[in-house]
Length: 206
Image (tube, rainbow, N blue to C red):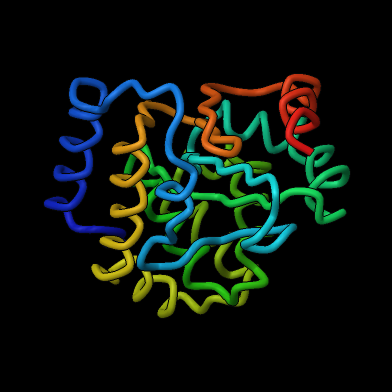
C-alpha cells in the first residue's frame, strides 16, 4: 500500500526533527491567536465558540502518552466538563511520524460524527495497529465504513496531508515540541496530565 510518498515521509521527518531546535519554548500564548481555526477547521466538543474555558490538545495518534491520557483521564474530563458544556475541547493533530499522519487523514475523511470515535479507537488499540500500520489502519478504516479504494485514495490526498501538516506547524509556532501538549485558555501544560491536575486548573477558571 502506498500510504504516503517517500518524499513526504522525508519532509515530515525533517520538519519534526527541526522542531526541538527552532520552536519557541512559550509558557503561555494569546488565546485569541490560539483559537483561530486552521484551514481544515477545528474538531471540537462541548461548549461553543463563546465558552468561558477552552482546552486545546495537540496530540499524535502514535503517542503512547496521548493514548494513556485518553484512556485514563479523558473519559472523566469529558463526562464532568465537556459533556456538561462547562468547557470547550479542541483536538488538534500533531503527527510525529508517517503512521500518525495517515491515521489522522483517515479520521478527517470519515463523517464528522465519526472523528472522535476513530481517534478513540486509534488510542485504545495503539499497541496493536502500530505494529503494522498499513494493515492495522486499513482494518480500522473498514470498520468505519471505508472501502479499500477509499482508504487508499484518502492516503494519497496531498491536500488533506498538507492541511494536517499546517495544523502541526501551527502548534510548533505556539511552542509545541512534543505530545501531548495542552493549552487551557492559553496556559501551556506539557505532557500527560492527571485528572486532579486538570480539574484544579479548570475549576480556577469556571
